[in-house]
Amino acid sequence: MASSSSHQMPPSTPQPPAAPPAVPSLPDLAITRAADMAMSPHPDRRAKLRQCIVRLPQAEASTALTLVEQRIEEAVGRLGLDDVLVFDVGGLEDGLRMVHLLEQGSGGEWREMGRFIRLAAIYGLTPNATLPLRLSADALPSRTAFHQLPLAMTLYKTIGHMLTHNGQSLAVQQADNKGAYRIGNVSFRVVPLGDLPAGHSYTDSYKRTDPVIRETSDSVIRSDFWLYRSFSSFLLSALFTWWHHEEGVGRGLVLDAPIALIGLPFAPTRDDPRCRRLRTEAISEQQGGVTVDYRCDRGNVHHANPADYREVVVSGFRPGETVAAYLCEAGGEISLWTTERSVGDRSQPLDVRFPTSMPRWRAVLRHFSLEHDVINRGRVVG
Image (cartoon, rainbow, N blue to C red):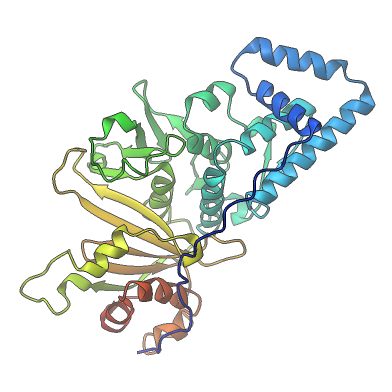
């Protein structure tokens, strides 16, 4: 079997205290206020803004538009979206709406969306499987949707109409009048924080901007059994579960390893401490992965013994990456998945056959002392 790679999963190092934010200039303050007015749910505030814009002399309007375009460019760069999104700024009011959208939330919601867009392109869901996506003001959510939907869903709504799977649009659609939504063939609803019981494992990490999601049932599969830690987790899980069949995408299972059974043929258990750590500990992007957490609670948030699952995306979410790879921990079994095509037959070591994916998998597995048992004792499938 192949030798261990030199790639390491770096430790999470403490960051120095952030410097106090710079005092914004008067033009920046004016843009912030105008952007808030542009996306206001109150028609009178929007009307006042339009009156101000109409009254601007041409030279001042041109200067204002240039400042707004610079503000958009700065936000896109700060959020690391240069490779995935281009904003086509039309008029001044449209540009202000874009500024407002880009500057909502902590920034984490946009970064999550950037990761999803990169993976969606690898899986062939973007137009011609290319990036960046071009967004105009027409693509922005309505002001009503902006103020009613959680921010992560609002951001997805700006790009979802540009994604397709086997010819089906992946735009967000309202499924009923009871709070259900649908993306492609998957329906879901937002789970409010108040619906989670005290002590639920998703309570402490709950974000109203990126909330817990319940997949809703259909006539074939009881998908309401599944609960996702966040809308971001739901999107990535849907990509890996439902939207990976696009023509020309060669996603495949490379290896699976029933860790719970190794050395315990007569007493299998899902509580191998290494798997439990992999399933529950925080893993940062700097440490080599993006986590996707969900559980099967059979539709009952009070379930006493739900089954927790985790996927760790190790490749495909960074700028410039062309291979999507992840590992999945499910009930003490770890499986390795990738879109990378094998460069050799099964007689070759995995490190030779999958030179991009293997170092990424190894780095994460090594951190949890699972590298040897998974790579050297797992069952090679692909």
